[in-house]
Length: 261
Ligand code: IPD
Ligand code: CA
Image (cartoon, rainbow, N blue to C red; front, side, top):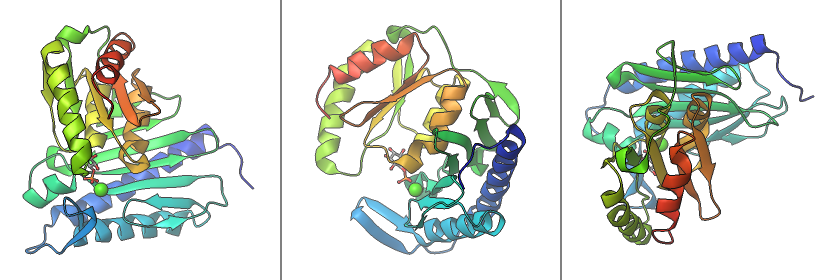
């Protein structure tokens, strides 16, 4: 029977997610000699054997402790919840970075209840970074409280973004970049939406936007950014904008006014 969790139970959920993310991180730091690459929605969108192995490790470990919970995983894990809690998992966010041995790829694990996102962990072992949040309890970077930058004006804003795997959408995203670039301090494309959101949370970016994000891209990072004081919205066109309260409306206007995505 679904019911609201106590503060102690929410903390247990976060501790479980953090432990499981660390275990997946250990698995992933042990890089394979060769990669098996399987195409997903297009040749640009792919998974490796390590995405699948990480998802299996995470799902098995979560269900071992909480067999009644639901699962939504990027690589296909899916199961309904009878506890009221559903885990939303990206077993490697930043698979392209992972393949090329670039830093910043991460394991993103969120849990939601009937209200919305409840806990989130983004664990990026290559940069010794773990971001966490529980709804209503603030956001943390390696255990230290974090806050987004605010107030920031658009012309002083360092903005992160990312691009979809769909080539036609990338053409539109390129137009938005061309319009936005003269209005801001600078732009970064790091390769992981989850870390981008955490960068806003800790003030390493002033803002972030991307169109076409999936639930597993933002389940944990979106909660972490919100708990750090940022506003996170996704409009009808599927454009997610994340920034401190002063910057958010200006950034959203600049992006949404640029072009349809
Ligand atoms: C991708 C990364 C990337 C973003 C893409 C995502 P994946 O996730 O977060 O930064 O631009 O939209 O799909 O495919 O590596 O899990
Ligand atoms: Ca992924």
